[in-house]
Length: 503
Ligand code: GDP
Image (cartoon, rainbow, N blue to C red; front, side, top):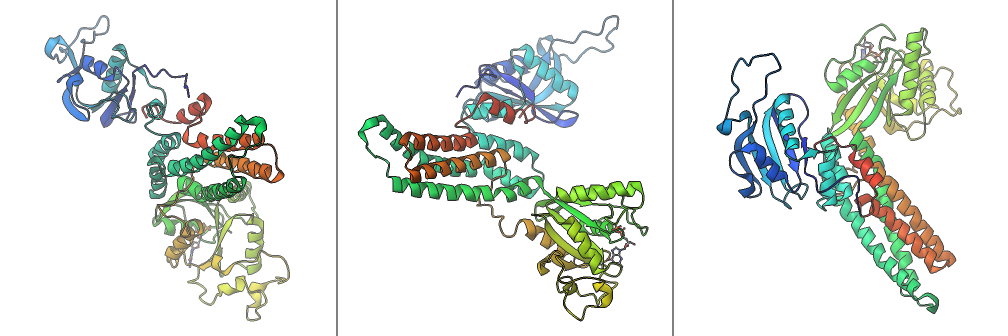
């Protein structure tokens, strides 16, 4: 595979820490001349002579800067030996190829984190023969030099972006190669068969059969089953990586803002007695056992009377459309069951995970959540039944979806958290399970699965060997795209341009 856009002979340099002021800023040099270039600006021990994985204290020096035209220098610059201007006192860490992240020579300067110093040190590296690294170029080199495969390189970006225990674990597992290993095994099995089939093609007319068709069938079923497991894990992987979008909805005064505060354990949203005060949406992150829930508090879904609130209502509907979980809240004293069911019907959509929270239980301890599921029960008070027709097709609520709450007194709020977690995780989060969390991998797996369908169809209809071989190759191609055995400039460009400079 040739990646033409970047020259691997260059030595690249970039700031590896975030831009801006910090206690320390790290500048990273990588390439065959990294150590030579570092030596030309570093004053201390000769880095060229040092062992790999060693750190050395010294100074970075330059010619004294000239004062701007017409200005006199007020103080003489801090001169070091050789009459050179001391830019900073630094620690240089040396990594000798191939024992580095990029498998090239690498020097990292840990400087004082002043943007002036960092800029100056980078300029000196450039003047001495390095070039600015492009976004993700260090990791690209690690990939091109065989240190990481493509899915591991992508996991590096995920790891940097991870903000919860779950997304961290997921990225870490992928970076350490768990997922790649699984894909490689699948590929290996298919490659064996592909080569037997292609051998048959070489014999052309002679009608030989090296690859046992029955075994091939079984193998493909097995591989498809494994791919299917990986595909199925994507829903969870996506949730763990990006958080779960969770909407809190209900009529004005149902207690949404109070619940949000109770969940977050602090005063965030504005709570008010006046109906319809939470006009816009508020989004907060709630971390439950390492999984991030993005909680969206919405304006009431009651028919709005003024335009500002109407916009809020519109927003609620939009938010519900794009969310994974809906927590629908209602006031057990004020709201009629019929109205609850009408709201739920409006908000329902396929695949939406729903929790119905009966709030303000402290005000009505006699309320029975059973009433929500059991329309025919004669003991339900008239008031709650309203004009409900039990035969009508209101969404049939699963009892497990209903919980009672008092948001104000935090009653059952911990239980609600458990429920939220169970809705997405449900015992499926185990660190040794391989979970797909990258949309590109998901797509490649889907295509690979489809190509295997074509192989199976070909085998059952008895198409010629060259077609079967072609479909197997196609499936292999898609699996290879995941780990980067098959990659194009465009693909690499898309993946690595999303990295930050210096990574
Ligand atoms: P929102 O409009 O849905 O956001 O409702 P708020 O959270 O602003 O609550 C409206 C009113 O109901 C406030 O006065 C809250 O204190 C009160 N409230 C919320 N939850 C409860 C509860 O569980 N019990 C009682 N008694 N009052 C509550």
